[in-house]
Length: 264
Ligand code: IPT
Image 1 (cartoon, rainbow, N blue to C red):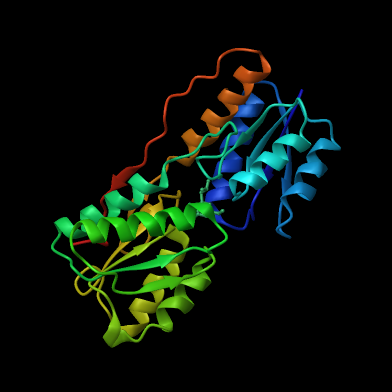
Image 2 (cartoon, helix red, strand yellow):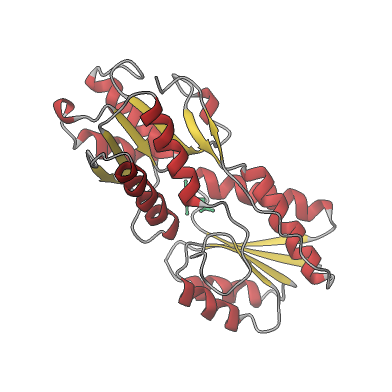
């Protein structure tokens, strides 16, 4: 009995930690897990790799638009497929945290601290989740009659976060920065440190994910927690329920705000 996981780059913390959780839960249920990593932005080819290995069900952690997901579903025929990073309005089975409420909670936290200039360091446009986090940031600012201070972009890696902040001059920094994932926050904090800008004294930084490392940043990172362990376990449970013909439990996943020491 075999499950397949199509995943985005495992050099990234969140997908790696999700894959680890999926593997553990699958093994616990007596399933073998086959992993195919999409490095070339070709979801169909990645899914075909799994289908060639005759997996019983497929978990898809690739950023997909609704129509792309529906095509993947067709490709898989009668096999159960579960999507972990898809446009929520897609007519496919999903298991994912809501991006809007997570990013909104981050902005509300910064506004409550008294910040009015709130910048964003976002992930790649290609990612549905990144776009949703940005929309929620804009909407939450607008609800408080605030205008976006700066909108920077990286590719989810720490290096891209570092470079994005270095491209922003030190005298043009916002009072607070929402970073769309913790890995980019790591690089951003490194650049701020290099500029001699105190965190949180001169700028507050809030991340997104709460990966296993985020409590160990210096200072420990305030972030929007997506419990990745729980996500991995839940996705396997829902897949197993479908394989066994049972009604998949549909308890919604929610992010939580974890306040540590990078916001004040
Ligand atoms: C999303 C992470 O939040 C982000 O940090 C990045 O790793 C991205 O994945 C890679 O695709 S989590 C995803 C399940 C929405």
